[in-house]
Amino acid sequence: MKTLQVLGSEHGTDKGNDHHTFEGVSYLDVYSHYFDPIRDRVTQVLELGVLRGQSLKMWRDYFPSAEVWGVDINPTAVADYGPRIHVVTGSQIDRDALASAAPGQLFDVVVDDGSHLVDHILQSFELLWPRVAPGGYYVVEDLQCTYNDNTPNVHIWPGQHLNPPGTNFVNDRLKLDTLFTTIIHSLDAFTGNEFRFIHFWPKQCVIKRALFVPSRVNQAVEVS
View 1 (tube, helix red, strand yellow):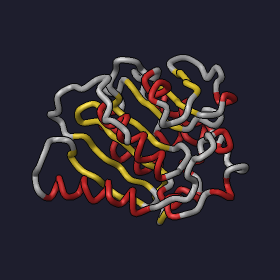
View 2 (cartoon, one colour):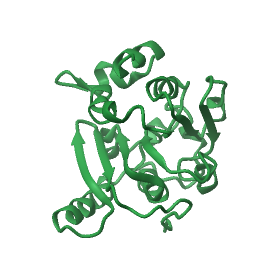
View 3 (spheres, helix red, strand yellow):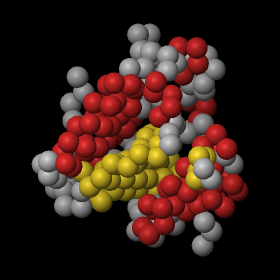
View 4 (cartoon, helix red, strand yellow):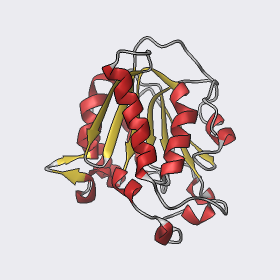
């Protein structure tokens, strides 16, 4: 079977380029560390942010038994990317759009490569974490963006201008750090059964769900 690095290169994803590599370790190397042992068992994958479908095709070929879902606010992201790939048009915080991805199913892998707006990252996590399978993974990419005012990128980044008026493009990283601290505290205190670990890599965070969590399909945490 081809490695994730080879598949990423073949399909043209940027997850293995220099911008996403630190000390010789790329996003794809990080993913391989966690996913290589389970690649034959993964059945449902979701990525927020589609662009031209490069990553979706990579995941499809890497996980041979998986249905791969993408959600993107830009309607131009919808295309025929081949078998086992499905794209839903909508914001990453649109409850209906997210529910249309693998309806009634739990995800083994969720990757947030969406707007990179802190408010969106938090709301997506609240909506999708209940749908992460026991032992599954939730990854947030490009954390360097969460320190910045992304207003200058509204008309540069694909689809960003499609967010509704009133969208907060001025990131407050402390909001995201509060979530991370809550997860770390629950692990340190041995409280609850939500999390197995949270790992930080350069620009990337990997959260693993605990193995023994009651199934909660279609139960999403209310977003305030």
